[in-house]
Amino acid sequence: MPTKKLQTVSLETMIDTHIGKPDTDRRETFEQELRLDLLGYAIKEARLYHNLTQEQLGKLVGVQKAQISKLENNFTNARFDTVIKVFNALQAKVNFKVELPKRKVRVA
View (tube, rainbow, N blue to C red):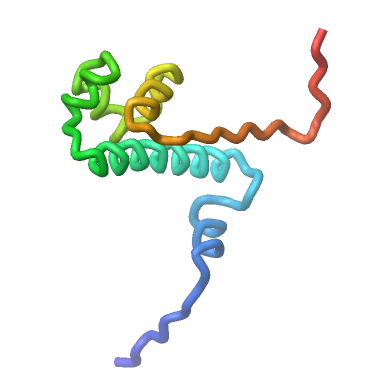
């Protein structure tokens, strides 16, 4: 039986092939979800760095342990003010980047 030769491809090629090319709806959704997952991961890492439990962090912020767990594991429905409170409690510097589509924004 002949052996199959494996081909090495870049991660970018794999994402293009299986998720979609840049600037497609599917790719944009994937990248946004990935960024949210990374934000949840950052919260968890900062919490662990400070040797805090989810319950302890929740008390510092004024929310239940369950809400901290949701932030760390399923970031999709997080309130912006809660996220800011969490990072403030963790003494973490936060930078947000906003990118607008390549069109003019008109303010009335």
